[in-house]
Length: 247
Image (tube, rainbow, N blue to C red; front, side):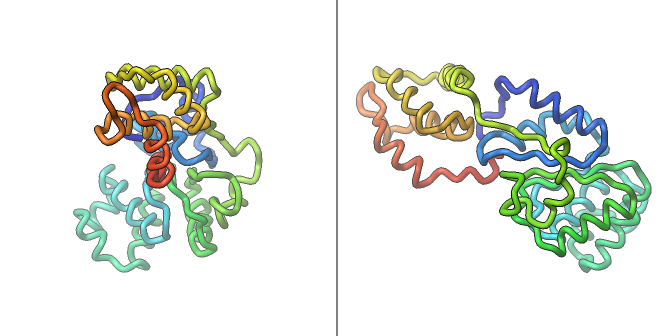
């Protein structure tokens, strides 16, 4: 989400913080645009031992991200093997994996995989090896807890207690959030009340969708005199809004 502020999510943040403290595997899930990544990143600075992988698309991207994290944390083995980020890319996939696996044994780390995209069996096998090799807990973030998003990692988070759902705002919370965004952006229009009603209806309480439509409301192409052109704005929103990265 473009506005880097968090509204009405203290319970969710506390839940994530508590789970990271316990160092046990868990899955954060919720619809695109709900703010999963934003919430997670807001508490990550409190946990220096969490190795965050923003793009968990493939085994290679995961091990490269882990190597960068280990290098940043001055892991002795990682520093000796890589020295800088350029050296990470120069390593073969097999060599990279071996160095990272050995490095994980030198500290009490947690791994967090973001933006899961139906992980393959091979990726799940690598994660299973990581969890077994150094007893390193692996947390993950996906749009849902189903096979279509979690892929072959689903068995790792089969218990209900291992799932943390982030939901869209309830109607009252969505209205308050939209009002706060309007205030922060300094938006005004003669039909603002009507527009906000439509935003709340169209968004279903999804904060990413609310933010996107309210930002569009400031563009000249969706303004006529002191009115917001609601229908063209909504049509363009439906056609162009891409919630990837707004998790």
